[in-house]
Each structure stands twice: as structure tokens, then as C-alpha cells.
Length: 362
View 1 (cartoon, rainbow, N blue to C red):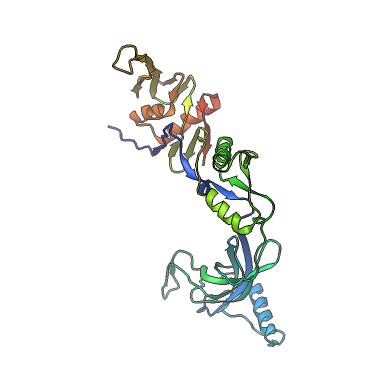
View 2: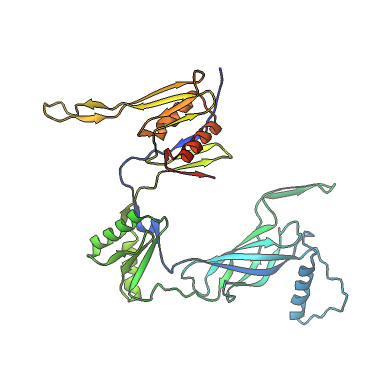
């Protein structure tokens, strides 16, 4: 008997609306993190530094700042020094004197930064201004070992380190939070329905006209000018629970792992697909049913799916109107189709215009 394995994840959603806090689905315009970057020297390494020209130049420049002038041609090669790049994230509303974490990465051919100390270095923003100053002892995670014959083995990357709270904020970044008469919420996932739901929820709490949907991403809200009142105002709004609009029908295929994720509302139009020796027939046979036990309760159509699979007798997939992809994939699984088979079928349906969903391959 053949044994097949298909890595398949079916994401099946009910028709019930999902409510999330506004702070989890949107951000306030102008309130954002800022990336900082810098260059520095790490000293105190145990023979694991680098020997690049820019490291030597930086080392000489540092000595000159302390009044030490080396003669021309002096040997400045040192295995205990490494040139590094510095990166940090400046949170919104950071004030001078607060501390932030710093990531230190080797720029040259240093083999490890373990045990090193970063010398005083400036961290600049995209505008070239200094927003923080970094210095401190490096923390390198993982484990590294070496043998007498020069062989080495390491876990993680010893040329990247962290300095917890290693930078002091020197300058605050201006933002537009306290400017003007309005605040704008930007949705993390643009959606016209969600934007309308946000505006309706705010207007239902504060009155009509307070919030306006500008587009699928932005909702503008009239806000008080006083900073303390604005903080309280935003605290109330960001905890409102908003019903999200349903996501577009989508299928995500990971071609490397064979994982297929099927979203909501995915259906297939009438189509026929030939693939290998598999035959799958899916038909929609609605039945008339009696929902209640009392006479005169009315009748309704009850959907009933008939799925038949045959691995050898034919080569045709028959999809009828309204068949869900969940039924189709389950039918293909019954005959043990490989992930590549399902992916090929999905791609063929998409190209034929029979797959009523976006197909995303990652």
C-alpha cells in the first residue's frame, strides 16, 4: 500500500465577525519608532579582532583625540580591536536620559566579539543628527569552542552582540501627536469595511461626525488640543473593540515546505483538470429540508456534497459551481496526492480563471 504525506493547513472561518481592540489593528499617524545607526570600535578582545585598514585608521584617529601621535609607519595592527556597526531602535516619545538597547555587528574579519567593550560612539538618525550615545560591555549569546589544530565550532553568531540599555538618548524626536485638531488612525491591514467599522464605532461613542474614513487605511478623528486631554481621549479610543472586515479569499502556498493555507470564502467555478492518474468528482446536490418540526415552518435548501475519488480509473477532476476548495483538497487527500500535485492543480485553476481566490506562492 502506498503511503503519502501532505502538509496541509486548512484555515476555516465561521461567519461570525471578529472583534479586536483598535490599538491592535491600527497605529496613530506620527507616532512611530525611528532607526539609529552608528560606527564604533570594540576593544578588549582576546585575539579575535580584525586587521582591516579602516580599523587601523579608526584606531589611530581615536589615539589622536587623546593627544597620542604615532610616528609615520608605526605598526598599529592589534588583534584585540574590531570595527563594528551599531544599530538601535528609538521608541516613540523617548526623552533624553532614557536608555535603549544596542546591537553591535562586526564590519571586518573579526572572529568573535566575546568579552569586548564598545568605546563611546554616536548613534545617528536618517537626518544625520545624533540622537543617542552608546558605550558598554558586549553580551554575545551562544557557545564557541576551538581545538589545538585550529578547528572551531560555534553556536549562533559570535560576531554579533548586544548591549542591553547600552545607549543613552540625547535628543527627542519631534512628532505631530500634539499638533492640530485631529488624530489619524492608520490600519495595519487596509480594508474599506474595517475603516468604516472603525469610524462607525467611534461615532457611536462620541457622536456623529467625530470620525471620518479617508480611505481603506486612514480614519481621521477630531481630538482635543490639550495634551493631557488628548492622552485620555486616545486611551479610550484605542481600547474600543472593532469588528474586522473579512479578508479577501486567499490561498498561500509554500513551495519549499509543501504547506498550503486556505483562507475563508474560497470557492471554485465549473472546471475540469487533468492531473496524473487521479480522478476527483465533486457535485453540489442541494436538498429541500424542513428546518422545524411544526407544520408551516417553511422549507429551505440544505447543501449536500458528494465526493468520489478514484486513483487509477481516470484523469479528470470535475468541479461544479459552488464547490469549496476545502472539499476539493479533502477529496484529493483521500487518494494520497503529494503536495506538488495539489499545488499544480491550484495553479492550473488560477490560470484558467476558475479559482475564486488570490493564489500567493512564497
